[in-house]
Image 1 (cartoon, rainbow, N blue to C red):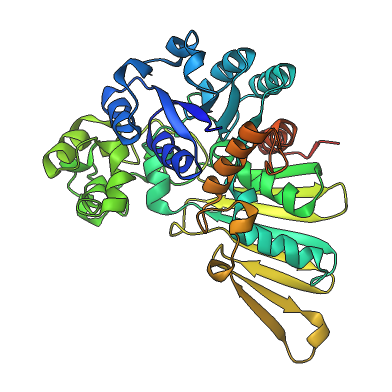
Image 2 (image 1 turned 120 degrees about the vertical axis):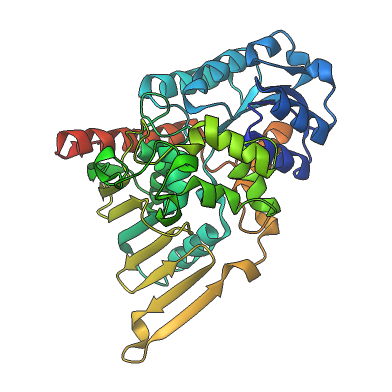
Length: 418
């Protein structure tokens, strides 16, 4: 059958996943989105009749004949309730990460989908990335021996951090979640998937260091348009968003979040009135801008995960140290160093982009989200959930690592998980 999907939330992620649903053979048949322009754009892209487009997901509770599954791409705190309600009506659930900012809500979601017996998946794209398959195969083949430790870096990027976590929707824990949950819940999920074990103990350190009023330059205004020192500021909204005009990809994101109309006039209006024109040293943000997590796994492996604002926006950087060698990956290629070749170094480079992975359900090279969407639709269509790499229990376990890390960060201690 062709799986019919209702999209709850037609922002950037909802719009992108809508395209992935279509490419994987599904069809968007209903849309819930409060912003009319976003709702109408997604409807036009997928030919969804106006009668099937509503302002709130609750308006679809009585119209479940329109769809077999729902894609939840609302704000983080708004994931749990629609999941519980639609699962109770027998509809399958595909949820953007994180599941929910709090453990009670996430546990409620797992209970609801388990009780209803519906297919449930969280979009943890790192599990589905081509380089993940390359790494898993090399480890499984014994090329580096047993994994001993892992080092993982999430380089958020300075302008990206300013956009999303200082000026944007994820700037405050009480309105969204911690930085670790919003940005890195799938990193910690991926580490468990790679190491094939669960953390037994977690410690963490991090804080908001730079994006505070204490670091505001002399002469800085509350908004970039009015600022005498804007031209010299690394985080100038005028420069960051102005450079997006005329670039199709960057007009979609991040500019599409700032203003729906991609013109200089509409941009200036948005910077004058909206949240994205504010000085980064005069916002109401409170999430950390750098954090380190140390993990001790039940199988003896140790790992560190670092997330930081102070980089270029780039792929994750990972080093996996084994008893017989080690791996390095930047998301584009995997470099294998084998100790057997000592004293002459034996180095093997696997170019991930050249590796054929279509038979594993990955339909867009390098796009783990597409593979996750395809796996979910296949499960709904056939009842075979084997392609889903992060079901309800796995996702809840990985989220619990995040909450434990945050507890450790606030307490300054080590938190036991097992």
